[in-house]
Image (cartoon, rainbow, N blue to C red; front, side):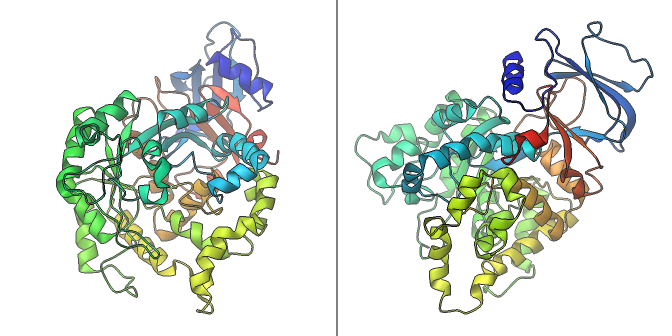
Length: 493
């Protein structure tokens, strides 16, 4: 990672720039807060060599030095050392709030935004990301950024012409999503040049595994808005997908935000539900947990499936109608000013206007966009938190063509929504660290502060298991052992 050190120094990102041969860092007299510990370890000394934690010990007035005087030293007095945050639900290709034609018409704005996005995630403490529906080329483009969180990806397996393929123009649909599934008896005609034997569950898992994917993402979505008749996968298809994925050590996520979808996922044996439960097979006015919804949630808990609430998805639409959103000073730390200014234009308000059209005949409804769905998801989260479900953290950034899901900051918003729904700071801390690391098979590398683990860490002014305010001012971000100043990572630094 020494090339990273050079890049960070040259970018002026607050790295403790030392000669290349000196790659040791020591943090003294710090309090370690890590999810595997029953209580904080106070007055600790942590030694990092290159990108690894090599020793954790009780603080000494004369700590042993490695490599003579080579170690840079941080005085951790009054600070808390924690694992870096992990977001296991992002979409890095998407430009929040822009259609593809608008991206093409505003290349300079887009360039500045895409250069900033990796820094925005780091600014808010996210040192590891999982893109839930990507390709090797998209990941290569992201990894070309010199300063970025560690990032992994899932291969998305929509069925032919189902969600989300239905949103992509047919001329590029199948190239954009190379791991789509062709089911026996599909009502959609097979595109010319497509070999159906390459789009079975076994074939697509083999393909994405060879491409370097970490996991598989399936979809159960009949549609929303004016569309409610999209094809959904057969149970046997997803069961076969799960078997193929598990055979090569890959977990399976399922896009599922409805009662029908999560019941389907339980039958299919998926590992993780990539949304909370806000669409119930109940009258739309129903918001309190019903026996039918409770049965599904109890099934998730009993089978120890991972469950991502993703409440901020709903606020991504709701906040389009919040007149103060674009003036929130926190937004300027996540997005370049040129992009925020564009969102204020008529073109930038296109998605707001699209959603507003059906609301124009309903005075007052714009202020309550998704209010029912938010209430249902909140109640479902409260139930899961109370019953100690296996809760995972995912922000779904961006959840759609909305500007109200800004990279990095959207994760902070999601934490606040989880707390409002009943999750404790300790539960949120575990969901964003060890639970997420375990979910993607990376707990041997990240998710805790332990010797031998990768040095992706945060220095905070408060204990995050006690208060979310700990994340409001991050003192330092440590990425692969290199120290970054969060202020220098901000869009408006």
